[in-house]
Length: 162
Image 1: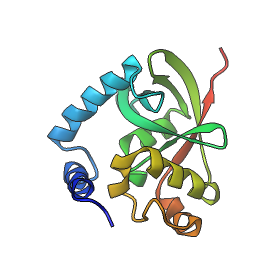
Image 2: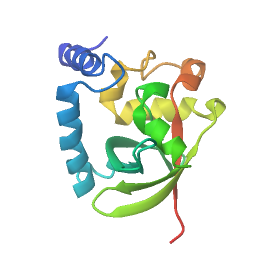
Image 3: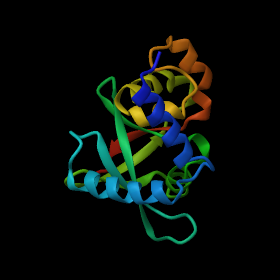
């Protein structure tokens, strides 16, 4: 059972991303959260991903939440395959920069669907806004997460050699 504030948050998140892309309000909020993440707020979870656009080649920024699991760090696409940052990371061959108070050159390795379940569950624990996009409750058995894992890309964050 979810509380009234949680239900309101879920509805508003789904409204802001109803088309699979951020509406104007979500775009403004994403820009603000991107700045906050780049500065380094968010206790290490909130980061700003910078990656080259697949069409323009411009550097594009996305605010994301880092999920930790098994001592490793991961990025999860809450919008699934339709997330623009996923297409841009794939086109860039996984090369990107994370900003979280400092710049960190990284390589993002896509995790296979068979390994995503526990990472998805952890992501829902640390990223409440993502809960409205994942059709499984964060307290559900791991088997439920394994069943939807193929729909949500997950990337392992690997520091790039200097």
